Length: 617
Image: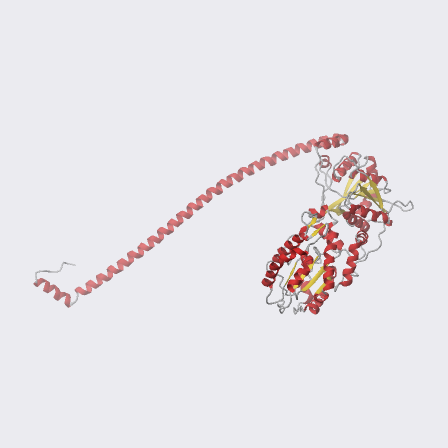
C-alpha cells in the first residue's frame, strides 16, 4: 500500500473538460494524495470514477455560473457563453465558502481536489490557498471535440463548433496562470502523460515533493491511466491538418501550450497544409472508380471529421464531392471556403434539400460506384475496399452494405441482418451505409427529393433497385460508418401511399407473399395476444394467491405468537406449581420432625391434662 505522504501544500488538478483530469487525479490518488471523501460516483462517462470532490464541484459550479451572463447562448454550467464574458467581480461572495472547504479538508497528509471548472477560478483559489501546487492538464483540441461529441449532449450535437471555442477559452486561462506561477504549477499534456507516466512521477517528486515509495513501480498504473478509454488522434492524421486549417487559433494556442509545458505534447502531432488533390475527381487524367458524396447543411464542424475519415480510409481512384446544401451558419461557410480553397470539390445548391444535394453531387460524379455519406457520419476502415470487390466480382449486385456504428457512450458496432425484401416493402427503413452501383441510381431516377430524411431516401432507392432486379449484398462483420444521431422522422401516410404507387409493380409481384406474411403475422399477433391474455390472467391469479398467502402467513404468525404466549404461561404455571409442591413437602417434613420430638410429646400430654388435645394430623 502506498504510504500517506507527509503533510504538504494541497495539489489542485484542473484543465478543460474531457482533457484527462480524472485520469490524472486517479494517478495522484494512487500516489497517496487524499482527493476527498465525498467523490462524484462513476458513471457511463467515467466508469473508473471522476476522483472529484463533490463539495468543491458544487462551489465551483455556483461560482462559474455567477460570473456568466444570464440568458446568453452557450454553456453557462462550464462558465462559457458566446460573448466569452466572465465577471470575476462576482467571486468575492464565494470566499467564505471557499475558506470553509479548505479548513474542512486541510489536515494530516497530502490532499487536493480536481475539477475542470477550477481552470476559470485559478486566481480565486490561489488567493485563498497561498501555497498550493497546481497540476494543469491540456489535451489536443480535436480529441476534446471528439470526446465531447461522444457524450451526445443535445447542446453539442446542435452546436458542435462550441467544443473548439470552449477549448480555447479554458486553455487561454490555463496558460496565462501557468506563465505567472511557474514555480508552483506543472503544465502537462494529457496525451504525453498516457504514454509517459514515469515522466510525470519524476516531475511530481522534483517539483511538488511527492514521493512514491511503493515498490510495485509503474505496474500499478498500467490499468489506471485509461489507455483503452483515452481516444487519441496523433501523428499526421488528416483530422489534425483539417483542424489546423479550420481552427488556426486553437492550433497556435496548442503550440504555445507545448512550448510552455513541463511535459509537452510536441512531437505527438503535426499539421500539414490541407490539400484535396488526392480526392479531386475533376482532373480528366485521374481515374475514378468510387465517388463519395457528402451533403452538408450547417454542420461544418462535423463535416471536417467526415472528410478526415474519407482521407483516412478511401482507396486510390476515389473522389470526394461535398455539396453545400443551403448552409447559412457563418462557421460552416468558413469551413466550406477553407475546403474549397484547399482543392476539395465543393458544389453549392440553394434550398433544394438533402436528396437533391445527393443528386447534384452524383450528377457531377465520375465513379462507377458511389457512397452517400452524411456530414455527421464517419467512414470506417476496410468497408470501401470490401464493397468495391463485391461489386467488381458480381455484376448482378447493385447495393453492398455493412453494419452500422453509433457514436456515443457505450455505443459501438451494430450488426445489421440480411435485408428482407418484404420487410423493406413494409417500410422497414434502417440506417445503412452502402456502396451503390451508379447504374442503380440512374435507372431508379435518383434519390426522391420528396422524402423527409436520408433514411427514407435510401429506402425509396432500395425499393427501386429491388424493382429493377438488383441484388443486395451484406458484408457481415464490417461496419460501413458510424453516425452521431440516427434519423427519427416518421413517414406520414400520404408519403407512404406515394411510395407505394411509385413502386406499384414491385408491390404487385410481392403481394401474395406480403399477404401470406401478413396472415402469418396476424396469426402470430393473435397467438401472442392470446398468450398475453393468459399471462395476464395468470398474473392476476398469482396476485390473488399471493394476497391469500400473505393473509395466511399473517394468521400463522399470529397463531404462533399466541401459541408461544400460552406455552410461556404454561411453563410459568408449571414452575409455580412445582415451587408450591416443594414448599408443601418441606412443611410436611418439618411437621413430621416436630411430631417425633420429646418436646412435642410432652406438649400433647400437657394438653391432655388440661382437657384438650391436638387434632389428629
